[in-house]
Length: 450
Image (cartoon, rainbow, N blue to C red):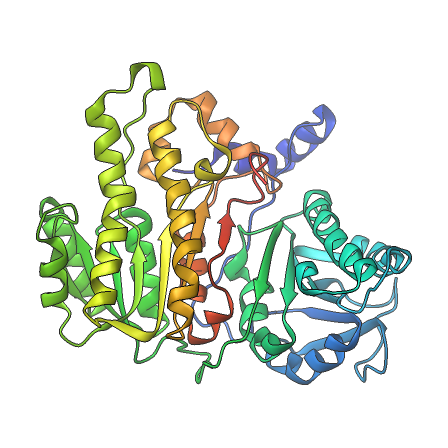
């Protein structure tokens, strides 16, 4: 469904009117398009500590325009305020900040640059996980980065985003994959996020097709977000198996034919669903996306047992049963990547969705509980928590609730199914095993939740 306010606010008349009235002015977001050659099409500036020097070596694979600012021993030409180009991306290495006095370097780096951002710019701050630091002063300084990065994301305008990556020393070789996502339009609707990168032995061999040779299973794939996930995984080189209920067979077959994939009509809540799934995957599976889900909304006082049980069965129990079966049967690959579709409702709660929010919070717990077990096999499991995404379901919402859902985020608009799909495609890459047991929100930095 089109966002009429977004279009009006960016028209000549609308821009003057919303500015005069102090109304939200969301910017059209730039998203990844086929044929794009570089993650960053425009100027990238590096600065800060020693990781900036390391990134300078891989930066030519990210952009054709590289500059330095407030960095030590960087070879790239210095960016000069008022003379340099508009900035499409910024990376500041804050991993060296070891006490609260040194946090002033954040202001010294960002303040001169913020007025020179191009539309839809992307900012990434690098740090070290505070819980892994023995020095209390350094741990405090690194924890402060989280408050700074989230606040920065809320201050940025014109479609810009900001993220914080806590990078283990053993994960520095996986930074390229993370930056290819967070500095590019693939992360258009992701902002204010904090992730930890840990050691991962796997590497992407071909950045044009990072999932080449990988077999992927997507549940709930016939339409909506599931279909977009399948399309994006196939675009990145995966062989896709598309699963949905038998009633969606026609849509499922059509999508599978278009993507060169395989359709599998199956009720994931059936007693023999696990056995049928294992039988249908004789060659194993490398990527599993548990996307299938339903809503049965009622306030708790009016919640029927049938509504409660149906949501729990589809959203929470089925992913656990199927994952356990794939794991026990050896169908799950040694370096598998599993993604669970959670929701910001599972983080912040939502009126009238006690069953849905509980099921989605349970998926986050599932990712956290299984992460150590899967790490022993070189595998990983994470949750992606979408916010307000423009789908047929949100199009059916009352207008007031729909508009509130769109505007109550730093980016001031709803996301698209592609935004969720791009996040899952990144987490499905071999090198993204560096992220495990975590939650990535695709919500435009929604104001609800953390």
